[in-house]
Image 1 (cartoon, helix red, strand yellow):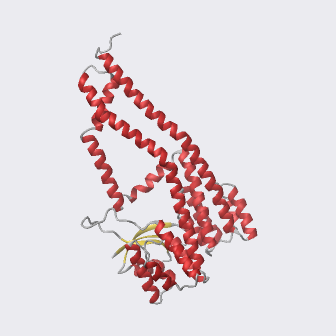
Image 2 (tube, rainbow, N blue to C red):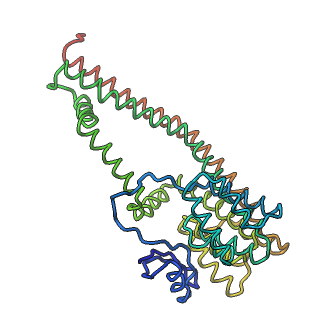
Image 3 (tube, helix red, strand yellow):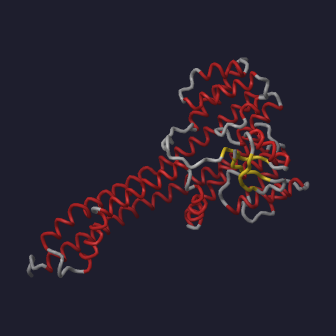
Length: 398
């Protein structure tokens, strides 16, 4: 069997590849013997069309949040983890997640540790496993599961807020496209069938060409192409395109600023959650950097890990950064002196979360009239072209 992996070496550098092994446990053992920290390990997908579920229902963050929150409550009530899992399995409606929980319960009953029982299930990422490991080592699993639930709630709320913010602009874009499609598909062809296709002004010829593109084979090819791309994305065959797509957005100045603030907010909350869960600072930094998509921030964090391991103070290392804002080293110095870094990162999250929300609102305030104006200009161009066509045909005589 072959397994795809993503690992990190002792310097914090990450890379991926494929390893052959008889089982996933053997693959883990082989990678650990090489001194790698495993970030992700999964069985390599074989290309197969027969029987594949393209739109298979995934295990959502909402399902995971409910599970970890309820598990923390049951453990705080004094129920043992195996009994708590038995209770939760019966209430889980997602069949795949129910099967995963049954396998975890089976491993626990066979004497495996909690973190080893959760490990190897691709639904649980390395950050989740690290929090469970830290909670198990200090004998406070309820707090560990509660921290995981808090982080999942943060992810869910963050995603919902972005979706809610983009709802109205997306509605305007879709409404504009539908309006233009109706005009090009039904109105323009009938109009030009009356006046003919000869001696048309240039603007009318442009509209006529676009009308052909929106009708017949053009529309079918466009919709078919989108459907094929969606299927390939669901199957995971377009994952190699994602870095290039992300890189495109980071080159747009306005979007780049928003993404910078978003990455700082996510990084700060991740550090807060893991430090609160008892994970060592360097380990928390290593795991949190994997959530950062901003290239310059990620590269600096990789350097940070190496410098802190050499004995430098946290604030000293962050002070040398030209990427992180000045407020970071100042607040981290306060956190080091007071021994309260987890709350400092929570404050940093609140700061950049607020900045991100404010920036998004400002952008949308400008975006909405821009969409309306562009749509109005296009419709205005169509109306003027139709008037010129009528005049050129001699219907209106001055």
